[in-house]
Image 1 (tube, one colour):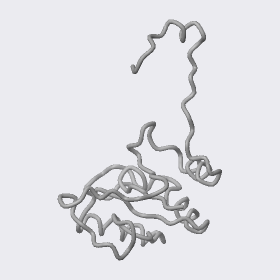
Image 2: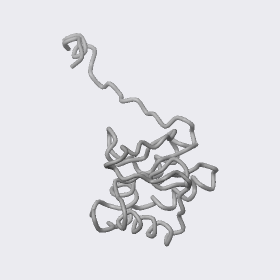
Image 3: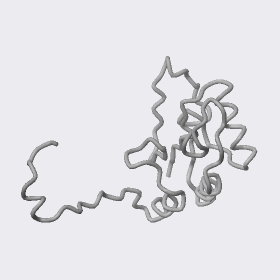
Length: 137
């Protein structure tokens, strides 16, 4: 599986443009996913020296990505002004997703189970559901 992983807020806490504090188990989980045979792509808003700092940080922790802000290593890296940098992946791990970033143990279990989607539970009672307006909102 190809997995695109954000950096700020996902691997480290938000402190952009500096590198934030490590998020517990992020690097270990990503390394385990690689050992399990998954291909990881670093997918970040960072560019230039700031991006290189993120790559170097991960390398120092023993995590090397298959590609960085590209779909494959040989692909020419464009600036965000030239390209929206849409990475083709099976799964995107990003703290800005709907519902936020789950714990890294949960992320690992979701990927290993082959069911990374967990639907929202509808806790409304039968009476509340019948009184609710039907429509888009």
